[in-house]
Image (tube, rainbow, N blue to C red; front, side, top):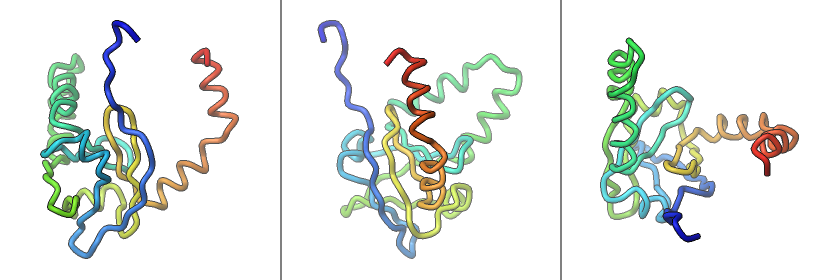
Length: 147
């Protein structure tokens, strides 16, 4: 692996419940990668994205310096649907009600690794997404990538 920077990525699937105050436990491995403060945002799917400060800056730099004429309008929408979070002593973060609504989070959530970030899905939406992705579709994608 010479010349290749080793960087941990977000992997795995964890199921937890939101409590009555919309607090959600973030797995320790994810908290370690996210750092003390991190961004929670909703982009374009019915899920929330968790970015470390470093990844959030990288992501938003691309957004703010984009070419499309409507980038500022899109940036406004992204930033208005973002909050910063700091886990409490029990590893929980508060998910604002508006973000819960946009991601259709009610009680049961699934926190999944997605490479450079993590995602929070409602259990129902995650299970439906998983059911849609067949083994054949996975095989086609891996074959197209040369795996």
